[in-house]
Image (cartoon, rainbow, N blue to C red; front, side):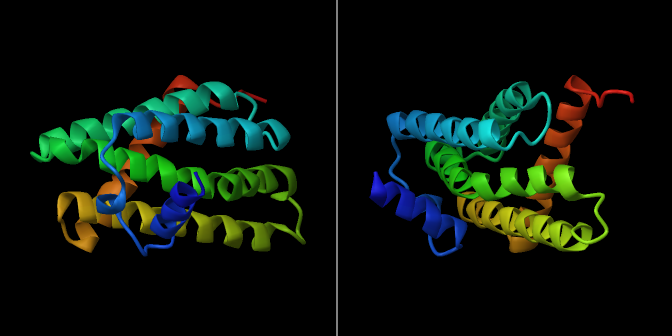
Length: 172
């Protein structure tokens, strides 16, 4: 277990890639479960948004479908298990920071004192997430760094549009 956490941390730090992840469907299922558990635990303590459980499930399913479809579309279906395991694994490592950042933005985002530092920390985390995800996509697809970054940003944008469509903001 600690070896896997170390591996996913190394992927998040851009030192390893999806090719270093064992190609195991069981490992993918356990990593997906671990990702959900980490998010549920952290979000229970620091709820990032009001309807976070539904959003977490939709976002998780969207990410899984995105990578399955993407790898089939580009003719690399044999890399699906390793790539999706790597994505959910490094995101499980980063999730506590991302959820805490989102909670801090909602809690203290309007404070003149905390708005800038919290926004900068949140932006840094999003850039880190994009960099790590792009690193995985680049290795999986053997595309350029620029194309990988663009694809990850498209994934994030499409995921957020889906969440906004399914969970529209409440009117004040």
